[in-house]
Structure formats: C-alpha cells, structure tokens
Length: 299
Image 1 (cartoon, rainbow, N blue to C red):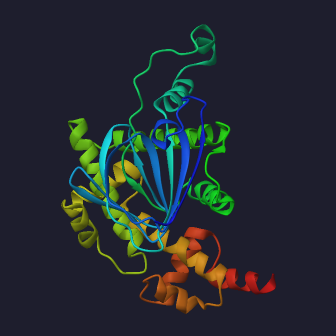
Image 2: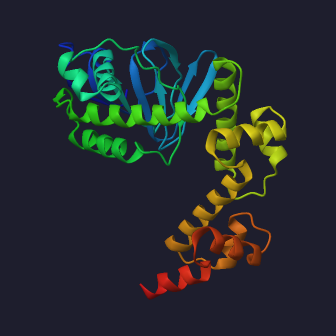
Image 3: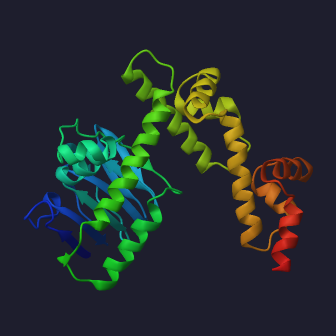
C-alpha cells in the first residue's frame, strides 16, 4: 500500500477528510487507480511522475512540477510506478475565496464588508514545471511530513494562506500573459496560450539542441509566424530569443556548478562553436564565460 500521511487544519471545516478541509496529503509508493472530483488542489510530484486523465487528456507531472486543479474538476488518477513520491495540497473553497477577495478589494471596503461577494477565482489548469515559485516550499513541506510519519497533525492556516497567495499571484500573471494574445474570443485566446506553453515546454526539454523555429512551432500545431507572433505577445519577446537566453542561463549553471570548460559548455548548450557561444554569453550575462570560470577557481 505504501506510506500515506495527512496533516490538516479545521480552520474552515470541521471535517477531517482530506478533500473537505485544508490539508496536506503525502504519499509514497502508493499504487492505485481512482476516479474522483477534486477541490482546489496542487498535485506536486517529488519522485518519478504523477499520471492523470483530465477531459480525456493524459496529464504527466514530472519531479519538481505540479498540476493545478479547480474545484469540481473530474479526474482519473492512473496507477503509479513503485518509488513514487507526491504531496497533494487541498484547499477549501472558503479559504481560496477569502484570500482572493482580500486581493481584489481595498482595505477600506473590507472594513465595511469583510466578506464581499466576488466571482470565484478560476485557476489555469496546467502542469507547471520547475523552476517555479512553489517547488521549494512544497519540497520542504513534503520532507517535514515524511520525516514525522504521523497523520492528523494539527496545522495552522498560515501554510495554506501562503500557498494560496503565491497561486493567486501566479494566476494573475498568467491571466495578463493570456490577455495579451490577440484573438477574437476568450476560448481561442486560451487555446493559443496553451499551445504556446506546450511549445515552450518542448524547448525546456530540448534546451541543449539546435532547434529551429519551424520545429518548435510544430509542437504548437500552428505556423512558424503564428507561433512567433503569439509567443511574443504573451511573453514580451520572440521565442528564439527566449530560447537562447534560457540556454545561456543553463550554461551559467553548468559553469558555476562543476569542472567544465567553456568549449564543453558551448557544445552541451547546442552552440555550433565556442566563439558564438562566448559572444552571446557575454552580451546576455555581462561577463565572459572564461571570466566566470576564473572567478569560480579564485573562490
């Protein structure tokens, strides 16, 4: 069966059932198939991969990533492999709405009406991959729960307030990116944004390759120019410029983190020659890769 540990708070609900209160649900080596309707939740993977089916689409959550779900979403949890580790965070509607209302109303108006009516927030359901602002927080929580091994730990609501604030800030940022996509209808705008995200994730997975715009656009199932235009609208820069910047960020990590030459870093990041790599690196980072190596040895 594996290991299951649940910590919860009865702040907004007297129920101790995970799905009906604000709770942390840690699972290790739990292999099961389940159909269910989820509340607001974060499905965070620590090891191996979490696998779901949502709206007939298979969803795979990699280590360090999480899948964000809205209240009422119907899902299937597919059988996991041995060695799986995951942390699921459940939020009651009341807590999410409370944090959301306080984010969109002024302090003055909240003094007059502490619980004003507001349209419930709708999260952008997606697999958010590392790096993301929640990975560190969720990893620390998982280690704490796993180390205790004890269920029904009493939690203050602080943990859920903190996570909800980060989620709502992320949602606001995503909404802004999506709103910048030039499309006639909201449904088309969201679909284009999803396709662009899919292509961006392809770039993340293949950051050390020499991808062309046409190759990347095929992942979004739109033409190269349509992809170029939509990506630039959503993220404020062209996809190929974004891709090169990401390569150079990874190159800096490689140069800082181990014994690697500038030539090796250039080849690993998919640059054809060390001169092009060094020139691009210095222009983007403000210092040369050889200077970074020299500084590392000096330290």
